[in-house]
Image (cartoon, rainbow, N blue to C red; front, side):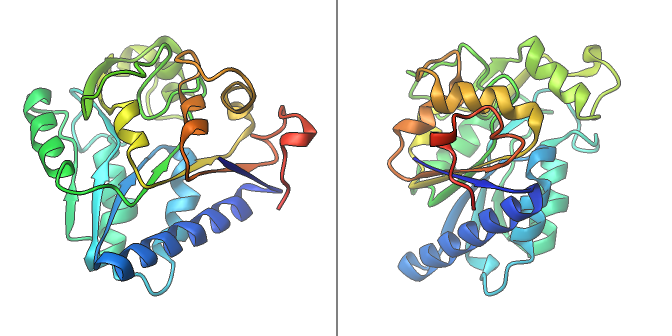
Length: 250
């Protein structure tokens, strides 16, 4: 795993987007299409903005999959990950083939539908974040490192739900859905390449735990260290608790 640290969030987002754009272009050149896996959340907004403004991407040849979604939250709610992806990625680029997780209907039906589409070919590049509790997608600690299911139904822990309140998506924790659909850890790791975009000081403790602590279900994103082609993009705030030897300033 490669760790890159930038002086500010803007520089980090720009560099991550340039990397992501190059990976998409390479996939299209290699096999005429690119399959991507997209994350949401406020930590991804600058990255998505830079990515959608990247030149020379044939977005009509890009197929997008969805990392996670709340169960029971309508697509009209500001916190809906479907809404965010539609507004900040799909509609801005013209991606025509995408598979969103519908948390409003029977989640098992949604899982079967999207998992079936996902099984037809590998994900070329996955864009992920790391939660304040170290979660990867909505795999909160202790995460299931063993299940081979494509998507799972998870119960969100208090730290995860409080993060959503802190980011301004909900007025209080009682409004945050208790359950979600999440891509499993093993399925995320099947991606050919993974880019983790993790800015902000509120992520610093999780970054330290996941990059310097043991690889453990209690720090779910620590599993990224086992992937042969993963890059973590940090700003100086999210990297603040790393030992100097672990920091690569760009």
